[in-house]
Image (cartoon, rainbow, N blue to C red; front, side):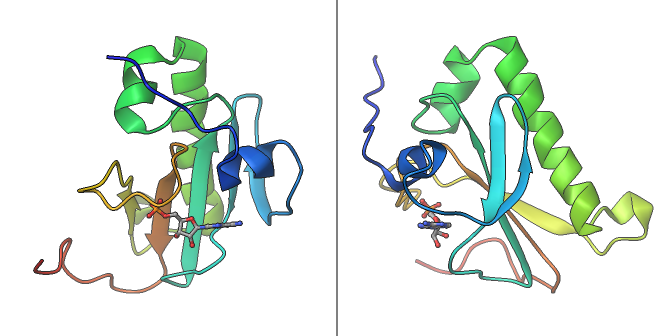
Length: 126
Ligand code: AMP
């Protein structure tokens, strides 16, 4: 199958500098910025700069350099937020919503990093 990427999605526009964002960290292949509608005291989105629709697209087709950079950026943001359980942080949750059942709103891969409070159970009843 092939993935269809919408160049007008809001994160593509952020990457092109057309709309502002509150950047937390920028690397060669990735950008981390604050979610505009935070669901927890810490709510950061991490996106690759490449044109990937969702996580499976990225996992199957991204270069190794992009995958390493994206993964390390997630780690670096967790470190910056001070949420690492192994370093006296109180933990966090990673979420990547994909497609209709995942209720993905923005069709550019993003991982949510949420923390700063107890987040409750993983899923609410449908
Ligand atoms: P989802 O696609 O459902 O995983 O979530 C998309 C997320 O993007 C939501 O949490 C929105 O609050 C967030 N969002 C949408 N527009 C912006 C923006 N311009 N800057 C930062 N976050 C945004």
